[in-house]
Amino acid sequence: MEKFVDIAYLIAAVSFIYGLKMLSHPKTARNGNMIASLGMLIAIVATVFLGTNLDLTMIVSAMVIGSIIGAFFAVRVEMTQMPQLVAIFNGFGGGASALVASAEFLQGADTVFAITAITLSVLIGTLTFTGSFIAFGKLQGIVTTKPVTFPGQQLLNALLAIIMFACAYMILQNSADGMILFYIILGLSALLGILLVIPIGGADMPVVISLLNSYSGIAAAMTGFVLVSTGENSAGNALIICGSLVGASGMILTQIMCKGMNRSLANVIFGAVGGDDSGSTGGEGQQLNIKSYSTEEAAMIFDAAEKIIVVPGYGLAVAQAQHAVREVAEFLEGKGKNVLYAIHPVAGRMPGHMNVLLAEANISYDQLKDLDEINPEFEDCDVALVLGANDVVNPAARTETGSPIYGMPILNVDKARTVMVNKRSMNAGFAGIQNELFGYDNTIMIFGDAKDMLTQLLSDLKEL
Image 1: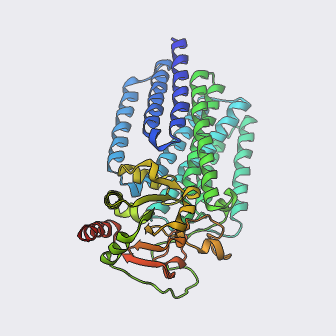
Image 2: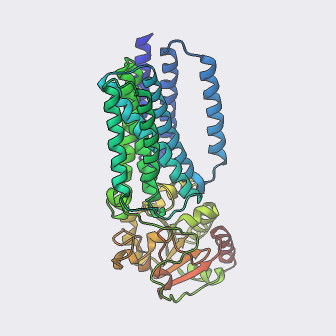
Image 3: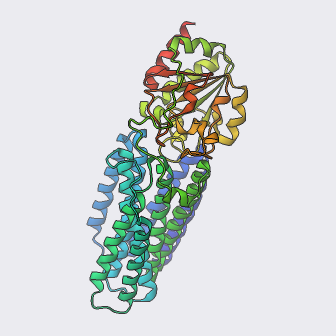
């Protein structure tokens, strides 16, 4: 039986690797997700058969309940809430790893390797759990999106880490207060997770999500080492492979996101950039020359255009306007016009937010262009239609050295002949600063809900 279980774990590991490879391209991402999920199911079944003295009724009941909850949220959660859902998933993943490591400690693990692995698993898993829920709160508006900082914050974080490892060392010395020391590690880990995320501003939430995703994978890998230390080699090796893949891919994605913002990871974690986007206009308070157009006037500009680039942003997601923009694009294409979509790596509130949103509307992947590929196209673009994007099209990133987004690569929409910007209001974006693009001579504003605006624009286009 053990040989069959080992083969099952091998198949699961191959499924994880192949599924992750398929996730690297939008056309194969859905199938990759299914293959990786199947691999996880195989690993779970193998683990159940490998275990002894297991209550199968409890296990099956837990799987059924978890599947129902997962399916419910997968169907009900809107695209605008997907970042919050991912944050919660990261938290639960870290929490699960910490619970498994805690269970092994309670069963009497006492070797140096086991205690070290348990400490790391509990530390990373628990801080991922609490940090992820703080990130969820920031994204949901429950917790302020402004950076929460205080003097000596980083020193306090370092001190907490030192205390935790000191407690682990004392446990290794067979201290009579082993359980109390373990609870101290658990509590300080939870506190550290909160302290690590609260100083990070709302503008950096996409990076935080991918970083926490990496943490959850590292926690799982550490838990795998815990299982190996207790003799459960097959299950431990499978968890190490799975956790390492998640940890490495999450870290790579984090680096890609940091590159997209032209900032280091240390600057994201300690820089405290980004504020509340609910009402502040931010910026230097300069007066902008705003030109507001109706959809009828915009339709006439589109009718004369040949090349159009659509720039989706969070406002598009909020309005659930992805299908409406596809209908407008298809109508324009039917009249012989060239329509492309510009995707900034940090547009929206999570990595790949805009790609998934547009894919949901069955927009061709060939039309989705990343920042480096699309930027040269703006110079001979007739109309750049900006739908709810803000910071990723703000020219201040090139010129304002005091701006929190200075140096961040942006979409060069200002180089288009005409820039149409759709927003609900003049409120600032997640970075909390005013966008000087809105006052440019070649920029016109079309205020209102993105879906309503696009629906009316399509109607006006058909009447021309």
